[in-house]
Length: 305
Image (tube, rainbow, N blue to C red):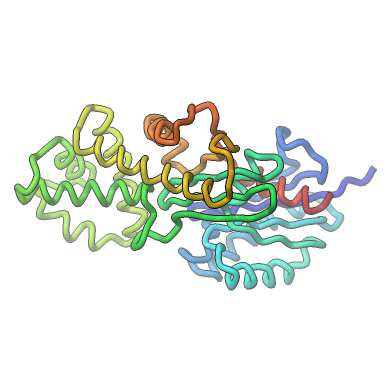
């Protein structure tokens, strides 16, 4: 019997993952085929680089079947604006890989991974941060996602930036010194705080390189560093405020499905607990989404049925 297929793509800021699945396949099963490539964030790496990587991942799995794909769903980071979605839509249709092409923001795949009816709130904290939700009427709202200059509160970049600011104040004598300063200097292989300026401002990829320092802030907080603890607590409150804002605007119950994604929230259990405590929810009441591509497949399946 001939099986119809869909392709789900999670085009993120670090990598692009594509899955091939049957239109009625249970998502707990392994996909028929999978492939990955480089980053697919149209805003951070540029449109041409992003679509080249997305195309590479699609080609890696579409050759597995000889019949046309029913639906191709691309959930892409940086595609929250209509102009970006329209451009990706036109490009996706030009591939002639599938009968139908859907373009969605990456956060939609996160929510769909955790909520079968795609209602609730998705919270992402990686290099950047964002909360996004949908209610039963199909209305959507977001909070955060303003980028590292205007927002990204509670993200790895935000936490690292705050830590560097505190470290510079310690070096000046404007703040009492704690282990945070030497830990950051050691992580950057520096001897003196004065060396921070050329290293930080001369970074080839400042946003990502600075964000990588967040792991050291978490390590200091676990060891009882008071400054690090305060940074983490404030960052957690910022994320919970995003969720609360989306929940309120969509008139969702406070115990609605909550999908959590992003390297910071996935890998920093202490931080995730702080966010959940701020929301007055248990850690078990949220779904950790480590494979958002699963949600992209689900969106494609629902659009095909």
